[in-house]
Length: 304
Image (cartoon, rainbow, N blue to C red; front, side, top):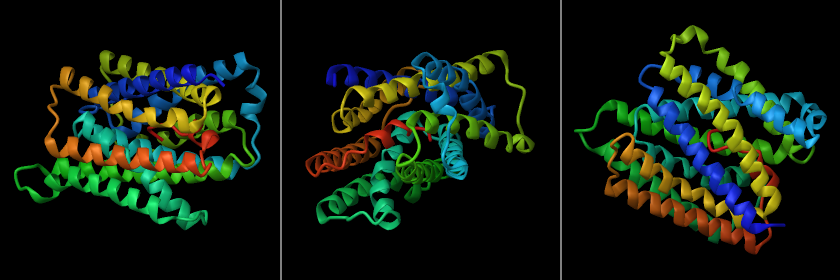
């Protein structure tokens, strides 16, 4: 184990995912989310295949035990990405990032309901604090009349994306008992590419050259980020590197302010602080009782 290297890989992965999201956001006014999912997935494939080949894991990446499990993971993850990309076009980048932190909190609830995991009072309290943070972020959009309906829809889509990502995490927890992480990573990009093509009749556009460039770059960056993410969990325990997910808020605030002129609101900052606090508490508690989900986390991306 090399914890320092694992943390460095995780920070690079988080930064790349935020840069990828900002590229998707820049194209969102013109490019439909389903089309963005296609570019994100199809251009990640050559990166992932090349990486598996260099590691000598190409055969392992192609080998599956349950095709249906990969199809379900792809369907859920594609829907999560689609909702998240749509939300990026309606909300500031830091807000979408903050609401996305609800995913691990929902995973705790879903694991109790679907996997039979014991939900202790300590973790349940932490989840409650985190969900209260989500409500703090959402409340201005649901209660004030001067905000547009588009912002409300964006908040709902961001929350739906978080819920779907939590469901994807549950599916991955089941899959890693029989499937290799390399196969989970490869077949997600493959199935997401296929499912995103189903949105073709719903208004795909011919992107401008700069939009096409950003979309292609987003796909390539997504593939590279996935490699760094998986490598992070190979070099350090999940309990060590997982908290660095929250560095994405710093990156999102910086990119949102300097690139998109998005000034964070106090409700967003307060809500994000509560969600991050809850997430860190849950990670600490899982480390205490030995429930780190390293392989599952390595197969899950922030956008599906």
